[in-house]
Length: 544
Ligand code: SF4
Ligand code: SF4
Image (cartoon, rainbow, N blue to C red):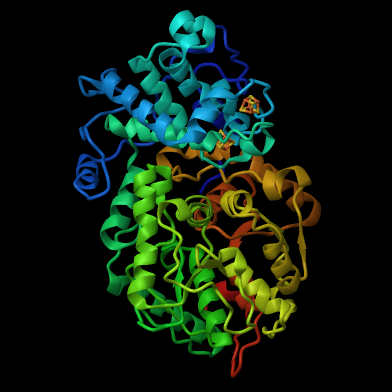
């Protein structure tokens, strides 16, 4: 991708108030309408996709139609207002967290400058406090006594079509990363407000294709791309051939094998797209090196769960598929690959929605004997904690110098870091497989990590400029360590990050490549019977 002129980028997406362009708000925020133009919205979902989803059990996606954000008339159903207010009422009764988030914000502003979308666009409505206020103002108006009596004076406003348009704009300029919640003294989770905004919009047929098509594919075939079982298997076997060419070792994965000890589930992007392919090669090499009794599934062929970006119902359904497959195959537990939101769904929602998974066993490493009590109810462990345990127990033959072409920094992917606390394990693994790695500045790592800027299904090309802006804080911190320490690799444990950070680095810091942690682990392994090519320049990415 060409490096676009930064001046052009800084003027092209934001229309209306933006602190970035010096166009400061002249009116109260309620009077500033959302203005749509190509590049600042993702394309609406296709009608047949919405109809398909609406026809599926456990899902509801009514009011499918052709519509465009650029049109004045969004063709909302006649009773749209009633649908939205009833939908909000239902959710306020169902989700206690929503009611609390609507009531307890004191407008202290601690979250205001913590959002990468605000930092990248300068648009005041991208401050988390104001993003939530887009919904809170309707809540106040229609669901509180003060709002009913005093309206605007009590922070309320009437629900209009312009409000719906504004919701669509800003619910899809939030990656649900939860960075803002780290800084909120009340723990208000604006990501959950965004989830509800998106749910309400779906009630009146408003959603984006980049999210709903993967949801539809996952529901139908088990993975985002709609790949059939034989294609999934073939692609994995191409990787087996590549591994043999590079290392001289033939690994032997199995698929849909009943009675295997462990079911391994990872994002389908690992098996189908660069740079995830090298991460998948990493899993294959590692599992073969330790003689793991495991199987892949061509049905639960997706760790990612775009339901999280859609609705609680869709999230629940897609998560349940992994456990249904574990039951069908009769495995003891599930081992999960490098994914972001799969782990957030697992740690924050799975137990309430589908758990506890007590038909499975508490995960116990067959190699070290370690029992992972932290997964006592989900019965699913992360590849990084599994690998860290192998290293700690001296079960891997590692030659760190094999990664000497790498000068790495570590990107804490939002969901593994903030939603599951996976902070020490990847650093421990990096310490043992790479000689050269440095941290980015402390206010943008660990719980305070910056988002890639394109998560929650926003990694679609029609909003590329918006993505590059939203990713600027992350790119800036990578540039910092690149300039000072000559960092050339950005390592992470998330498939979306591997895709989105690659575009982000190409744009802002093109000298830096993006890689998965398991890629680095596998490249450092000394394998039994190996006949390794010269991989000293690019590791598993070497063309032979
Ligand atoms: S969840 Fe992330 S993207 Fe959304 S408002 Fe908070 S910081 Fe911004
Ligand atoms: S930090 Fe929390 S309480 Fe303060 S303005 Fe933001 S959401 Fe409201």
